Length: 238
Image 1 (cartoon, rainbow, N blue to C red):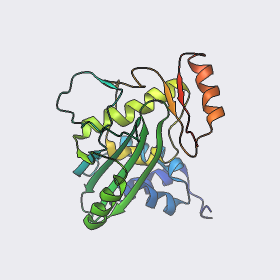
Image 2 (tube, one colour):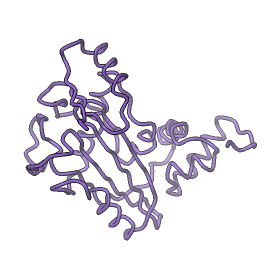
Image 3 (cartoon, rainbow, N blue to C red):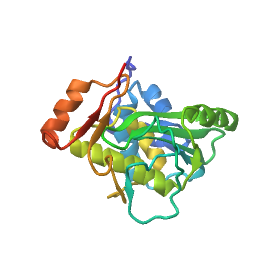
Image 4 (cartoon, one colour):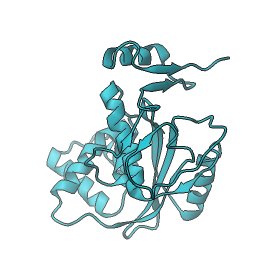
């Protein structure tokens, strides 16, 4: 429900700027303004672009990815980008990324999580939360509990190329990222692209069916964007 107090666009932008300067996360700003995180995301970006002072520094606390993330992908250069072989890759085509930062003058960490379909759909889910270090340790353990070989500590640049690159790839196929991606994207930092990763399974758009996916709608979109016979679909049996 939205607040009854009406504010002008300039007033809203100034309130966003003040709250960001104090280290408030996007969800807290959205609640304060009676908006959704997706609605407040462009205001946060606009506030950063028009601010007279630089944004408060946010120390990178950690950045992780699930093991097997590069299976079927081609990485151009970057031998320092780590991965491990995962023999029983039941999560093939998915990469789970976490980023944790400590905003200046804040006692809480800001943590962003991204479930990335690197073969087709891009960001399928995302989160951004404020928490302490103990909660972060628990989140990391739970986030990667179903992934063999993870979590792997990675540089933030690698996370950007995986997450933003997959979003760009999916958009080219006709798929937008999950609505929660917009407020979570800021924790990854700026992106100019293109990615140094070739997405799709060996370069082929490949939809691997998940439990909540609308298979017919996704196949229709792929058929329209790349043409019949130029994509692959892996159906769940049973």
